[in-house]
Image (tube, rainbow, N blue to C red; front, side, top):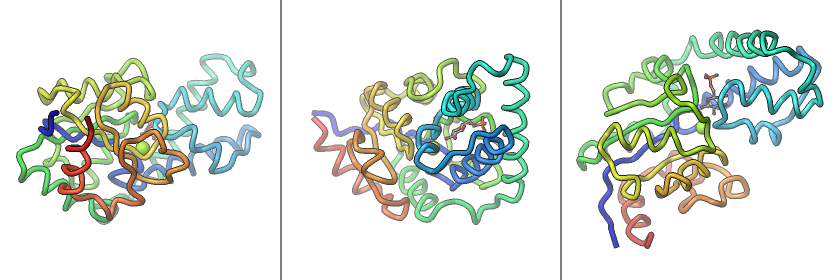
Amino acid sequence: MTTHIDAIIFDLDGVITDTAEYHYLAWKKLGEEIGIPFDREFNETLKGVSRMDSLERILEHGGRQNDFTPVQKEALASKKNDHYVQLIQTITEKDVLPGVENFLKQIKEAGIKIAMASSSKNALFVTEKLGLMTYFDHIVDAATVVRSKPDPEVFLKAAKAVDAAPANCIGVEDAAAGVCAINDAEMFAVGIGDRSVLGHARMILQSTKELNLETFLNEYAKKD
Ligand code: BG6
Ligand code: MG
């Protein structure tokens, strides 16, 4: 049984800050512009998924997957990003979700590495706006990843970058696809949010307010 933790690897959107809501609003706006309205339930299937894969899912949802050329799809994805970038301009340190910064401090003090595994190409911009760059030993964003979550690639890359063995890592996610990615990376998955969406995680917290290193260490110690 191993109770040693090399690294804790965080998703960004919806875990560190509430940008998951901004992604939703931006996709919803684009969806309405092209006549594909959708609700929050469908939006759960977009969480954690890359920009182009999200667009494909939306087009399929509206039965319009064959209506656009690759160039038109690029233009639609870029339009969504324009909506999103507009929404994140006003992000400040106040937008760090409650309990997150204190948790990052606890991890640092314990000598455990901190990494980020994000599907977003805007991850560095958002993390800078939040004033959290100094906590992260490494950030992997969508720019360097080939396969989007639920593929484990982004978590495995983050672990490697901080010299951590996947079996000794904990991943923290708010998305069903993200929990699948952590599980497939053979890491210990912590889900933040609704049990009905994140039931495949090893530990589920209702909100970031419950983030606490002692709780993590206790649950992790029981893992084998
Ligand atoms: C993920 C979000 O973090 O990033 C998704 O959960 C989003 O909702 C994805 O689509 C891609 O983000 P971006 O900023 O590269 O369009
Ligand atoms: Mg997320």
